[in-house]
Amino acid sequence: MSLFISNNCVNCGICELECPNNAIYSLEENYAIDQKLCTECVGYYDKPNCQFVCPINNVIIRI
Image (tube, rainbow, N blue to C red; front, side, top):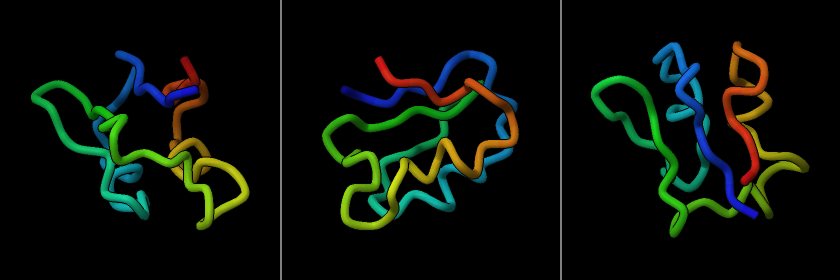
């Protein structure tokens, strides 16, 4: 599975700062996740940290 940031992103940038793999980057209107770098925080956290720190529910989803 992969993580994806939906169009409901409010561009707060918290997820980018908290990603241990530097897999999250800024686009013009929101953020995106580099699927090649994202490990869903395996080895760092029990759950994907970007989902935990996101202030908006259901913005970062598994696809």
